[in-house]
Length: 161
Image 1 (cartoon, helix red, strand yellow):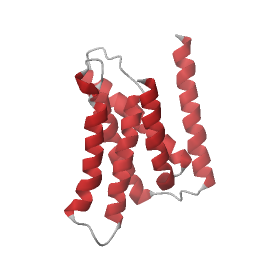
Image 2 (cartoon, helix red, strand yellow; image 1 turned 45 degrees about the vertical axis):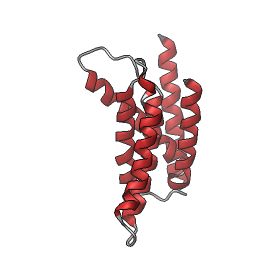
Image 3 (cartoon, one colour; image 1 turned 60 degrees about the vertical axis):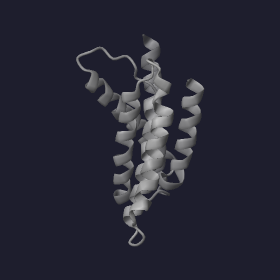
Image 4 (cartoon, helix red, strand yellow; image 1 turned 30 degrees about the vertical axis):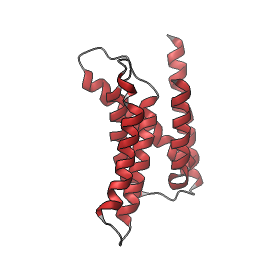
């Protein structure tokens, strides 16, 4: 499971880098995972929910890819047939269903996968309209170091228990 999450996360993340830059891509993957997990915990409230994992960020990255594709379509002036919209959205939802359902296993948190995708899609769609200069070194380095710092802090806090 860990290897599958790592592999898919690296592939989806690498596909985001040309559009968003390295720092911003990984920062948005982390943000979509965090927000997807927060929404999952909120959906289960007041029940105790202990399935906060990295797969939410993987499906957040998938949502980011779909949102980026849809944002690029919105920015184009011509050639916006319905098929152009269906293809990225259908591919994303198809991958979400294929990879995120867990073949009906009870220990797979399908809701977390869904929330990760649902958060990532509008994040990237919004970035299409406020896309900063992706070559801006200060922004990319800041997002990259911020992402590294947040992940490091999370591990330090997790290891203290």
